[in-house]
Image 1 (tube, rainbow, N blue to C red):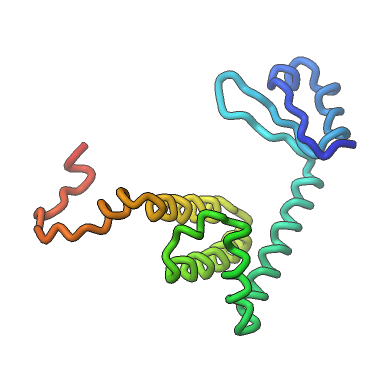
Image 2: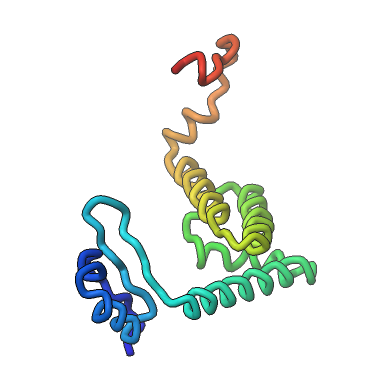
Length: 159
């Protein structure tokens, strides 16, 4: 048994479905390459439930640890750069805000069994760190223009 995902063309699943599905015994997931769309991942319902159980348990443990002891938030702040190296570019107050938002968003996402909000939040914070990492971008975003450019038109008016 291999822990690696097996990659096959979607047409293999269509044309040789039994042989292709049998490959799930070799791998926890099949990566299905498609010509006309986004690739898909195929797994068994049992494996998907195992993955969900693990993510949910890790989320609940992280949330409980972050809220239980006064020093646990400091521990979380200490380990964030190992998990997300880009936090080093965030200002200190933003690192704390990120940690709190991460735990809260993970808990909320776990409660509805949908991790999309966590992925979106992580991407937004990573882009924020990216902006802070570039002095030119940071300067452009933080300069005080001392001018009022008037009301901003609604997006519908622009389109």
